[in-house]
Image (cartoon, rainbow, N blue to C red; front, side, top):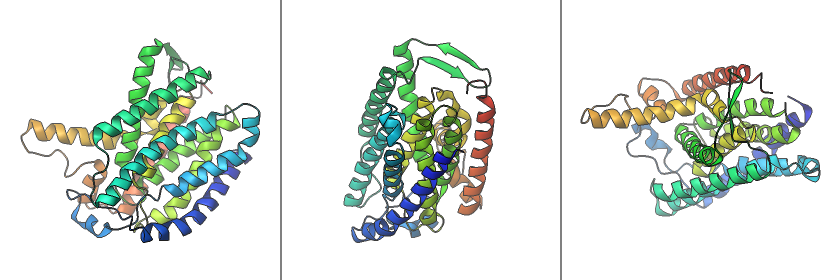
Amino acid sequence: MDISSLTALAASFVLALLVGKFLIPELRKLKAGQSIREDGPTWHAGKAGTPTMGGIMFIISTGVVIITLGWPEMLAGQFTHLYVYLFALIFGVIGFLDDYRKVRQHQNEGLKALQKFVLQLGAAVVFLSLMRYEGLLTNNLYVPFLNVSVHINWVLYLTFAAFVIVGAVNAVNLTDGIDGLACSVTFVVMAFFTAAGAQYAISMSLFPAALAGGLAAFFVYNHHPAKVFMGDTGSLFLGGAVAAMAFALDMPLILIPVGVIYIAETMSDIIQVAYFKATHGKRFFKMAPLHHHFELCGWSEAKLVTVFSLVTAIGCVLAWLGIQGHI
């Protein structure tokens, strides 16, 4: 990791810690407490009322750091880090609207699924078109490990990419189900993107480094027992960040190894629903998504966070080996 990335990580860590000191008491005053799913593990009921929308702290720290430290790059005409941040921020705003409605209505439902889908799909299309216009994205699909690129018609690629982004964003959102899980897994993913981005330009590594620092600070408040939750504000921002970085580096298929936990969480949900319908009421997992299944198997939240983060780290190491012919 180069000095600029380390500076971004450290600065964002300190800033997010400071923001958290002020933000959490304010969220409590606003009674911005999280409603807990009624169909979740029974012991999660004790988490009801924990302040949500805490993702604001790493959103702010990341934004301030990339604008401050990335100013020379922007003066030189390099705006990749800003595009990625703004794209993730759009998803964060969608999440904030969702959280706000939940808090006001005091229930665990915010925006309707169709509303979120349309907003997310629209944001994905705009981002991809902008990256294409700026010459930062091609319609050549790079295949890791094989070190080959497959040329695809732009309209077909745009359609594929938009749905990949929406799927990735919601997969990250689904992972945010226990204390510290989404932020720790995504910290590892951002560490990978920092290392990969540094092979291209400072503007490619600045954003993931800053976000990694913000997530490390957020973990201080979010580890079990959590003092604050990131809410959809934070998890949708993280989903947007993960997806945007993969496309900013022009290698979206890298999401498969680095996002192994996100994919496993999503597939467990899909399998559970399909199996339930096919067997007329039987369940494949004790509970979905996957982290709840392991909870019911007796795993502690700390163990889940550790194991899932290690699995992500292994996926990132494999991804790093798989792209060596590309960087």
